[in-house]
Length: 299
Image (cartoon, rainbow, N blue to C red; front, top):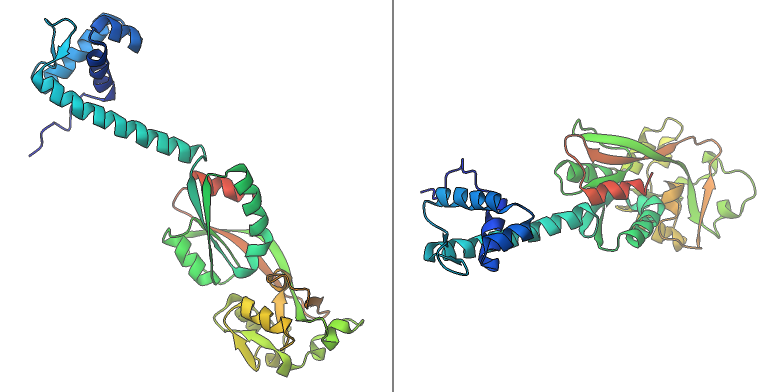
């Protein structure tokens, strides 16, 4: 059973007015505090009492006191106003970037550049905002953006959805990644695809976006798309390369992921393959204030 009509004209101003009268014990002082004329305040209370179908105040008492029914009503009204003010303060903090969080998806190779620098600057300007980074392959990141698990993502190619808006934010050329002592790292001559021993290759699992780009590249011989060692992440790839366990074909930004002095990136003169990095956002929803602000640090 509904106690109050959904069509009631009673609002927060009526509750504030009644509580102020109760606290002040006077219509005159309450009107002064609220910045209204006494007659307007009196009419507000009359409207409230008409809606409640009972007197809220005993006007014969001095100072004015709430009736028994009015006392119970105003206790509830005070709780409603307190919760409203708290909710309002919280949402103002979110809108004012004083609190909240940003849920970011990122390909592992995007964490160092451009994400890390953006996080440092953003956190310096907005220390009350938490930043959560989920690193994964492009397809999973795209699906997490679509289902609103993530606010946005930075990913390479490998997704197609009408529910996603993609904006290219950088391009990154593929090259050879090897240990600093490897013969191709030490050679002064330009590296060619024919210089690479297929048995030296450490490759990514075929589901990874980088692996698919290499498989689809017309410039690349098929024997350079498979390897004796396979990993499921660029972190594992680069860790093995840092121990001189093999070489890999990777974008330059991916080569920098583990920041190892043992790793060298060399351009390949006859490989013209570029990996684009995209900013993925949902097409049918508005970004939260913190996420929208964070993106400004990326572009």
